[in-house]
Length: 443
Image (cartoon, rainbow, N blue to C red):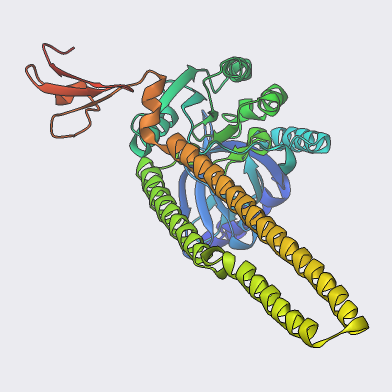
């Protein structure tokens, strides 16, 4: 019996097992959750694929994983196309993957692309319909979950950049069945108000299923019909939703959306101060220019000695009279008549020339006055317009709408009641006047 025994080496057994497994099972699609993901320096991926009741070791080599559109990490549910094999050196059974995609992403991605193409054909993504963001919004509407990290990030950034900015939060569900209807209702509600200048719509990151409510057509159309500029802030920088394409501005993160919505208050104050300096310098230069021009005109020949022209013509007339008198004394007969006629003619010409000179001087004076008055009026309008713009940019102008500004006696702005204690002295600035008060108690 011992002579008929066929004895295999361990390597031969493992080789047979590999051949049987590869030929018997073949290439298959398998779904499970990634675990113990290792990305080797060679570029190969090694991981475990598991479900509720089993696990299997897997590998995906560099040439194949280069086509995967996401980065693998523990906890992601995937579908992969793989063939079973046995690593002969250790006898370990494993799956070798050649394709991989996030579970459920194939069908959802197809829906995404179809809706994206249809809405793009309707023009909902066109840049021409995008509304610009306001320079300095009075109040910002935020449509997001009231408990997520996104709302904390948005509010923290807004209050840091512009401490007294007004924010209205419309709490909504951002995940799960029917969440898109709440998002639509919130967007439509903000559009019924007249105190919202811009709105942020979004949530934190997640899988394609988590973000899917922002890929619903009803949300896209609510953003498209909004009369208020909309900043979308859905997921992380690598995430894109239909809401991002329809919105007036797409922010890569909720924090970035808050930075786009409002500028740094200190930056605006610096710009106002710069415009104030430029305006004052410009007005000063204009006044100096007008003063120089007026002085130059006042010292011009025409205005300095307007009678010189008349005096010159009178001297010419007197000279002509003397010459004609001489000619008349020494002339006679027809010569005297010709001289008389010449004298009359010359006298008429001189009188006409004198009248024309006076008229020309008067016309020049009127024209110059009209031009100077027109130029002064135009400059007054420019100064008035610049003054109006300066008043609009004045940060204290907001006090005229019923707000007030509270400081300590040394000028520090009070932003929180926590900074005060009973007995502290306060100075409250209104649009007209100030009030000095003491803190009696605080809540």
